[in-house]
Image 1 (cartoon, chains in turn red, brown):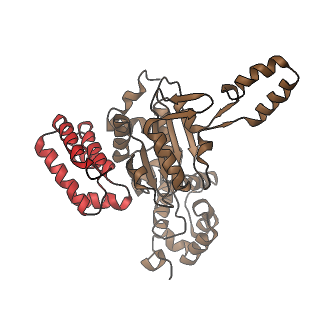
Image 2 (cartoon, chains in turn red, cyan):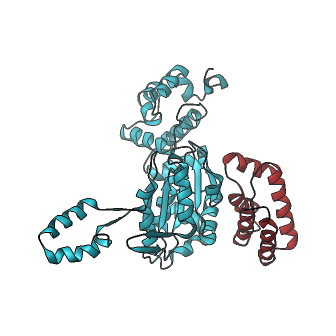
Length: 88
Length: 309
């Protein structure tokens, strides 16, 4: 996916987000993903979208479920799982 | 038999219960991942050491969903094309030989020689052609043993589940299979494949979880013995053996000890039955040098756990 495609993907995921969660929640998730990227994870637009797509299926009152529900979309190794959990 | 087995994947609790009914202890992250895989229609990639129960997840899931399990076992040198289909050359040759003397056969064979009759569907085509009524579970086991070329090939299949047999036509899956990939991490898989999947690392179970697994999978075992077995295995896993015991080894050992009518494990018995938990000669020698009695007492230090330089 070329960098030029990124803004369009972000708009797409915004509309998904409006359907799924409050804008505050989505803003925080986006910020968290930027944190993950800085920590070395490869958070592609596709992964980000799938992360948001997972949110409606998760019991938001269960913090572990919310964490894991996001994580399975955004990590690619045991080490990345640990980084994710630490930053979360 | 439930009328809509897919609804059993509707909640984390329901999944844990359904797996437990099959005597598989699924922790909540695994149950959640399974649920998301069904909802998002994404494959699951389970990565972890050998023998922690990754393959079993697919087997249990197929039972829970009351749907067949199609297994593609990967290995070094796996040729991607053989995972789709092959032609039954032997049968084709036979048909050709028979047609040599029979003109009627000869003319019909011209159209049928590359047809269904002689087509051997391999796992990926089987998964695509599965008629239903429910999606099948497709297990792609130990994908790390295959090569990068196979990964690229797999990516194509996983995206649209469409396979073309040039002589016959294009098959498209009526029901998208539930796909589980496993890897023992003998090499790093490409990020392209990983991001196609929901990723979960499967660790060795905790002592408590392992006791529960033994209790369920080795019915009738004495509680004290099961506790001792799990304790020893937990201790052994702290040592960097070439191959640490997995859950499968724990269960094997438990069954063996139960068969020997053992009440309590002593150092001598641990050494004698070490082959149940350690599969490499060097590892068993290592156990001996550390001392079976110290392992039993969980009295091993960092010096024992790490190999000497």
